[in-house]
Image 1: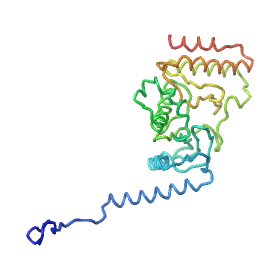
Image 2: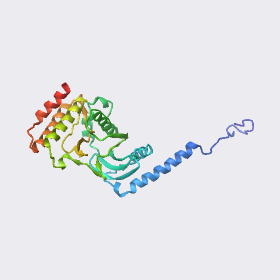
Image 3: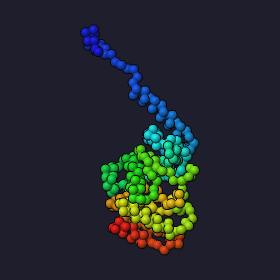
Length: 277
């Protein structure tokens, strides 16, 4: 209440204000303390001291949010490091997961824009680098969902927050699954049929991988899995045909080296015919 009558001059009035802590204040301070501990734990851990400043403040906030939401329990070491992203092993409530962190400052902005521009899902992306990288992360999450729904074996996408993607870990005992190009292919004919069927299913679902080769196909649980779908575009993308032709050439060339009689043109005809059926 304001005691106007007891004031000697205007402005001398006093209002009784409750400045004691509220539950919101206490919760906010507790969360700040917990985040500070989380930040120091991540930054001080030897396994996270990687080149390029991956763990900037915004990324740490995203990771902390994923921890708070129960998607991550504890981090392990790095699985792979690259120019655009680092992938880390992490423990989750039910099983190990892979945590892919796109590097906003180091990502190939120009190359990313080439895959985003023309994709109707990202018409309003604009030209800011941070916005492009954040959209790219959501794009990979969406592409994994669509591929999975089409019957293609891909890592199960679990959650996405800013530039951080949490997905199923393909591997065992903390060791990632080996790429197709890293193993001896015992039955090239069967492997080729599986990859061709995956490409057909993706195309029927309106997607082109855009960077498919023996290095983006892994062997896990005696099955072939497709990974790295961040650059995958819809068939409506102006460069989708060019990307599909390149995928077909890469896949066909690999299996030709395994002794199969196949060409990129033949594979392209099979994949495009599958969408017309």
